[in-house]
Length: 438
Image: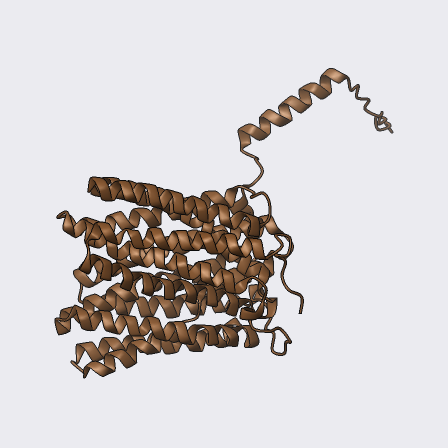
């Protein structure tokens, strides 16, 4: 029988030229095929479960920018009183400032899904009750009671940041990217929410904005809460004290209060300035440019790795925001140009996101982990309180002096935020911004 051919070993001769050619082909092949290292946002959303809870979070967060506009349009259209509509919205804001920290504390103790879903259901029922009270011409006091019930809405952005903090523990760079994304998402939702609400109320019926907002809120929260694998563990029994007692937190809340006054005053004064120059309809576009600048800057800020500690970086961020806000606003007020004001707000918005990202990073670092949702909710409450105070002060300046004089309110509030941030940096060791151990 014929013998099978023998298998001789195959000898390869590898030379230096072969290695060079192989290395060149590997590099060019990778370049042609697009096998590049993933960017920070792409790496962020490769975390298991991140995409699912982010989708639910965005759906539930969008109505936060819809409810105020929807309520004003709905109440003012049915009752013919903007004063009543404003008073109802102010009541809801005040109720949120009181209730939100308690809701966040329950979330920390019992878990996000267990508390957030029923709290959101109560808020959605409050929004629907407001709709029915307006539609069926119920007494005015029922409007206040119904809208106050929406204060149980959990701090959705805070819960999302808490999940990132849980998933990315120990990876400061990835957490910085996540915080930047969350800030950009805040700006995007508060930029698109009012526009979407105005479209729904104007195209369909006055109650459409409130109705769709309630549905989106509940649907998004159910989807968010269903992602149990990414939920941080509850801290039912903890010795952690109130975030108010954590070193550096009171000064950070004061910074949030001052920055909220910047945002609140800017909105009122910008509308008055546009109205005084015969362009009231363009005020919304001008304010949207500020949010767009902040959204873009937030995403860009997340790409770069910041140097130094967040505590040392905060005064520089606030100083940049103050400078970019003060000089262009004063020039816009002097020239009386709405186009110049729009450009000024776009530039100022670009400094807003880095400031807010750095502030929230410090809140995360300085708040006991067992009270993280409560600490971030207190920061948001500070912003809301500042927005209310800034709106009232800016409106008073516009009514009693002029829209131009009203620009002094956001400029002064930004300067106060800068002084507080400098004082808190001097009072604390920049290296002491790690999370308290409990």
